[in-house]
Length: 412
Image 1 (cartoon, rainbow, N blue to C red):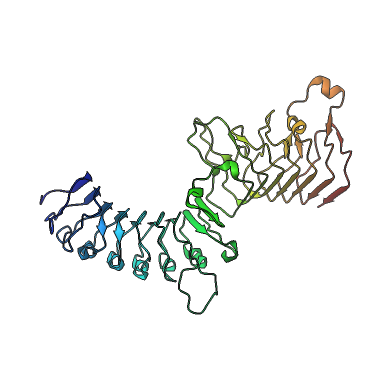
Image 2 (cartoon, helix red, strand yellow; image 1 turned 30 degrees about the horizontal axis):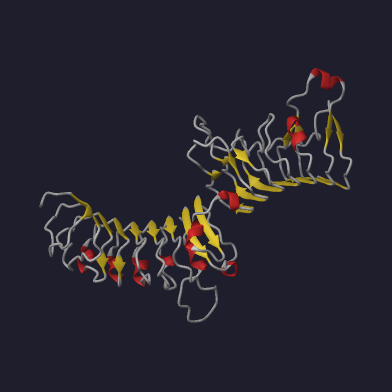
């Protein structure tokens, strides 16, 4: 045993463990118990000081083994589905980078957790009894990259609620400048602080309002309004396993703002090698949005909104607002117009590369000779502002009609 580097006891039918194991070279210890009555003695880890990974599942740790605090080299600690009480000793594990307490019965996250200044990953999901997180704990975890609290803590304190605050507030999460993944439950939208955003966030589930645990397993078909803002690292809004040919969303209002590296709404199919917004399409053929009636795009890096030829799933679109999309060269192709007959409001501003609103893709010789007609029968408001490279609405080979137009505004 002195030379062992790993011990793995999966689904172990063990009724009792020894007082300690002499394993000075042990790097990883894993035990998944089927009997929650199995306890670990206080000195069990005393001679495992080289341990870097400790995974315990289904264990009774109500008398927390004090020798865990001696594991100075520990990087990963998972206490999944365990019976826990006072875990303040964990604050002594200064080199810990990953901590999972998921599915445990923990009632309070001790303030000593704030001493884990190297922590990058914290899992508190499905800790249904977690009622208290002292204020200031999250502020100290400045290196935290991933925080998972689904089906868990919901007692967030409102900012400035009282002078003797008993729980953490959402304001503290704003100090986590390295955060790339977040799952939390916010019972009341009124406690969300202003400018509640994370510059590096890539993945998140933020559930707002009254919800049962089962509702975390929600699907996109229920989503009606989607507003995503200020995500410098976001490349896709929806990323699947590439096996799905098309995905239908029932979103009625979609706003995408401040996403300079956005490649597409849905991840590309296998074979696509694009890793930047240039040359890609926001709403590719995988994305079906049959109920979308409002689309707002501000400061995103894509060159095209729709594919250049003959595909559109947004036939019910009524409002389109585009602002500050620096790479956009045109808004529609001529083949798209027939799919946008419901459009009522079109506003385009501060897009420095736009030369035409409608690009010429499909005009035939016959259409050229007869001055092909482009018509937006329901468009009543049309605004163009600060489009420095704009040459015209469309190619001169077309005739354009706006029979319902009431507001026309052109500036700069």
